Length: 124
Image (cartoon, rainbow, N blue to C red; front, side):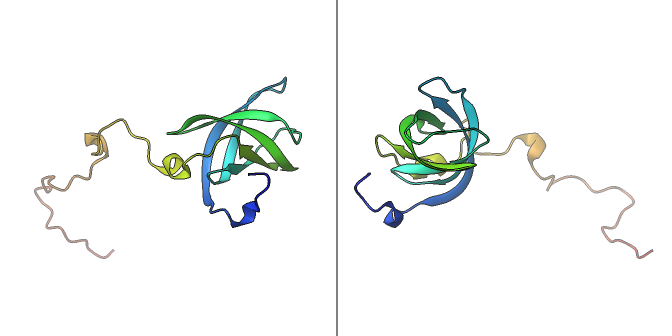
């Protein structure tokens, strides 16, 4: 994507946390993903990154994605992916297969009323 004008590429603005792994020497870091497209992303984090650094980022519902840092404006920087992804997968909710809320998180719609209460509040 280096030869393309990437400002016309559709992006999803979002806020996700991700793990960033560096290929050479720098410590791994937890970063905030600010926007995501098929070819790259803008991340924010408190670390010193150099342009050209090879990285891999663990995106939820997608897995590890390799890329290169293409611009740096601390604390934000841009990463171009080596292969395109479908950014909509990273946006889809993560759940363990159960579509209903657990019993303790459901509203008590059918709960019995208190015996002496008529359902109205009185003004004090």
